[in-house]
Length: 157
Image (cartoon, rainbow, N blue to C red; front, side, top):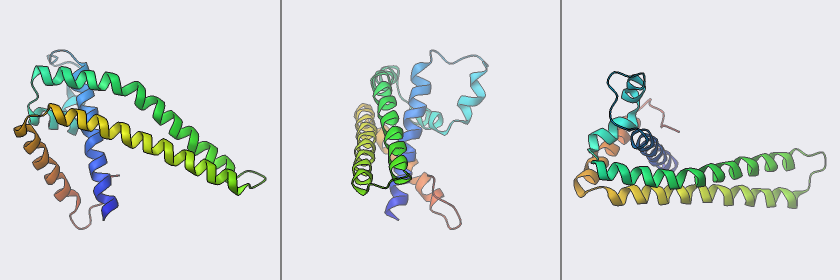
């Protein structure tokens, strides 16, 4: 149960950051451009529209994303490399358990760094929301939780 909640919160954070990136990196709304259908179908974009971020808030989100992206790219690369090294250690011709344990620690540390970066980014965005926007976001998240907790419905990974 707790893992599902973490997955949902993680999913919402990813949706929020993805949508914020899409909206924040674009200029004015295109007039029937090719981007329109993709953006309209993106749930994160709809969440940001529903929150009603103003121009200044969008600029702040853009700045947060510009600073975050290279850090996230590097952290994700380290995480993938750590996982690859762990797999190599586990399936090596000669099993060295101390090496496997060391590789596990590397994976844990790289994963912790990803979580830290995502959380700090989410905190930065949370700080720019007005109390009304924050309440609206909480309601949207609650609705999402309710839809995904219905019987027969799998939680979002």
